[in-house]
Amino acid sequence: QVQLVESGGGLVQPGGSLRLSCAASGFTSGYYAIGWFRQAPGKEREGVSCINRRDGTSYYVDSVKGRFTISRDNAEFTVYLQMDSLKADDAAVYSCAAGRQMSGCSISPAAYGYWGRGTQVTVSS
Image (cartoon, rainbow, N blue to C red; front, side, top):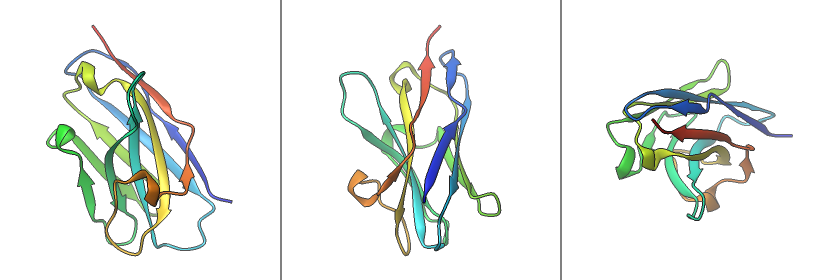
C-alpha cells in the first residue's frame, strides 16, 4: 500500500525558508512522479511543483519559479521541496501526491492517485 508522509511545515517570516519532505513507501514500480500541491483557506488546490522519480524531470508553477526547488533522493524514496523567499501568498497546507507517470511529470491533480495528509506552512511576521 502506497503511503506518503509530509514533514517540514511550520511558521516562517516573509523572506524566510522552509524545506518540506515527502517520504514515500509501498511502490512496486519506479515509474512514478511526486507532486507538491497547496491549498489555502477559501482557495482551490494549486499544483506547485512535481518531479519524475526515474528521469528527474521537474516542473514549477510560475508563481514559485526561482524560489522553490524540488529534488529527490531515490535511495530514501523521499522528495524535497526547498522553499526560499517565502511570501504571505505561499501560506497554505502543502500536500504531496504520487502517481504513475512513465516520464516527465504532470501538475494536474488528476494525474495523482495517492495523497499525503499535508503539512501547514504559515508565512507571517
